[in-house]
Amino acid sequence: MKLVGGIPGEGNLLPAEKVHGPTTAVIAIMTFAMLLVAAAGLALTNAAGVVAKGVESRFVVELPAGIAGGLPKVLAAVRSAPGVRSATPVPETEMRSTLKSWLGSAAAAGDLPIPALVTIELKPGFKPMQLQARIAQTFPGATTVTETAELGPLLRSLHTLQWLAFSIVMLVAVATSAAVVLAARGALDTHRFTIEIMHGIGATDRQVTRLFERKIATDALVGAVAGGLAAAIGLLLVGGAGAAFAGELTGGAPLGQLDLLILAIMPILVVVLAILVARWAILKALRETL
Amino acid sequence: MSEAPREALPGFRRRIGVVFQDFRLIRHLSAYDNVALPLRIAGRDEAEVDASVREMLDWVGLADRSSARPPTLSGGEQQRVAIARAVIARPELLVADEPTGNVDAEMASRLLRLFEALNGLGTTVVVATHDINLIALQPRAELMRLDGGTMVDPTGVLKNPPRSRAIAP
Image (tube, rainbow over all chains, first blue to last red; front, side, top):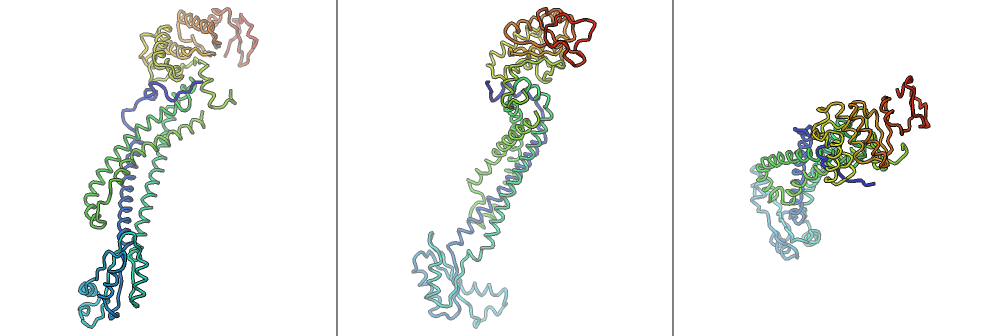
């Protein structure tokens, strides 16, 4: 028994439609939403990465006023320690300026004890724990605060938003699949007579399925391209305004080349998903009914 | 048959040709494509399909109507397209329900000759008909008569059914 994958001239076996139906519109909207959410998720991932990378090698040493040896001794000790890229004291004028918000003119009073702050940045590969321990041992009373601890809530929020974006993309994919299943079942009902004749003549389920795959693939391709173009325009408009802000925040473009590649592939994945879901739905429906 | 695995059915169906009383042609396909369908489903080479379809359409007198769609064909023409589709793949069994019901006497005679030729090549031909004259044209055929939905002569040896009794409701 020879079973073939397709039928020559199968493009004519279902009547041609001049206008793409609601499936195309649904897939276009879903692709548009999916790309925007994915772009937001990728931008958040980049932002979180930049923030995390920036703070993991930095910490601040706080020296209470009147500590033995004072700031110069601490700076000398820290700068001679291995793995330290820089140790920068926060100027006292800056400290007093910050305090002015709460204390008013009293912040400028000379008798107000102002602690000294030193921002320390480590070289790549060095962890702050060893140096923190050494500072605490050498200068009792000095306290250290890692920026990771300070920015922990922000990073956690960014990660939560990443997962939220990923979940929304997955939900949109599920919704797209559901729309394809409904479209496939609708198409089967519309063309039931043709399918019955083909089965009666000896067509396999796979041959019948290919007819509908072809139609749904065309609809999905048109929808995905339309949705993808709309999303690209939207990202250019929104991204143009947001890029400067994002660049200021993260020190670079919100979306890298890899991100753009991922976004470009997504419409193709939507088409592949639509074809696979349509195949599954039609084969299942054929086995249930005929 | 009802217990055969689903995967076995297409191969089994390809060995059977069926002429339905209501023709069951695909309306948006041309007569040519309707007749070609069994061969294309079977995966035959397109050159072979073309030669076979043209020969078959010529044989049933529809060579000049090959691009016409079923809604534009008369009942008799649709019936001939249905017959051409049923026999083109040389099935082992041909089941025809009133195959000459909508054709003139000359075409009915040609169709019967086609059925005889197929039978000579090894195809078992089963024809359901009300047409006594058609039966008379087939003196060598084995007959089974249905009366009130019941097979009255299941042996197939009945050669001259009584004209006074109804045949096949």
